[in-house]
Image (cartoon, rainbow, N blue to C red; front, top):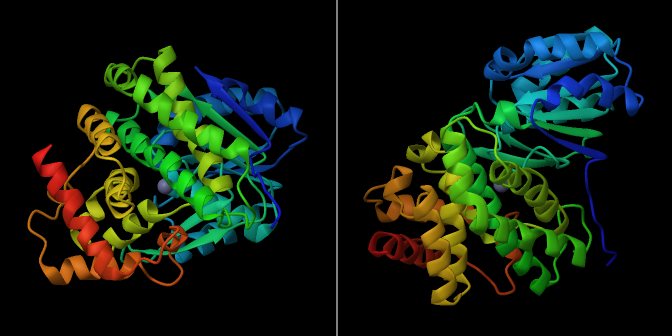
Length: 364
Ligand SMILES: [Zn+2]
């Protein structure tokens, strides 16, 4: 098996970075016209900066407002609009689902994609993967696209305006990266691009975890004040770049499969990807028989930044056996990344790990 490392072409991050968007695109030879697929708050926050920056760079653009969901119907709707506009690039601006739909549209049309996350709520921005949801809100599939974004531009002034809960959810998603990377390396399984992991990817995944522990609480304090600080910059990088490179080039394991399993319970739909993934990390560690000290470190971190550590905190205060079984069945579907664990995993083992993780969270 060949080793494969996958990454966006360029990554730009910092305060008021949107002011440089046009110049960065011009530097990469992206001349436009470009369609901006925008979430509503991204549009409200950034429309003026787009106008200044893209006009300065003589790049024509149009804005297409996203529904905020990433479903097949939404992707088809945007694709038709972008095709009619004659755009030569697709820019996604918003949260993970907006970026995922823009990425799928760009891939359908064979156009370069520019990723401008306005929250650090998941590690979606850097990847070549879109998570497609059903109209009912369940994860339908992971759609791999051909190319990572040509440019990821992260404006930390915008991210500091987003609700603190979104940054916390991003930390939950990033929390999984090291544990899933470690598992995939140990199991010698294929990463998201079909290759073996590299030392580079696992080192970035580990740095992601260490950054969360060191800077998470301070970054949370900053975002609550809508302040951009060095700790916030480091957490934004961890949630976006380190976690993105780490998961894509090392692989996913039980934590994300448990997330997907949880989406089978409608009560969890009100919770964010990273919130469910954080509970997936605890479940994975229990499933793997991890050290109690390591589980305690993860629990301490989750409690400190406010990530869910119990099923009750995900809308399932007293889950009946049927609900747990539905979650575990979905988490252990044949295509799920739980089968990247270095041992065979079935639904019964997953129910046991879910219940134990929940009990540890309740008594911690
Ligand atoms: Zn994730």
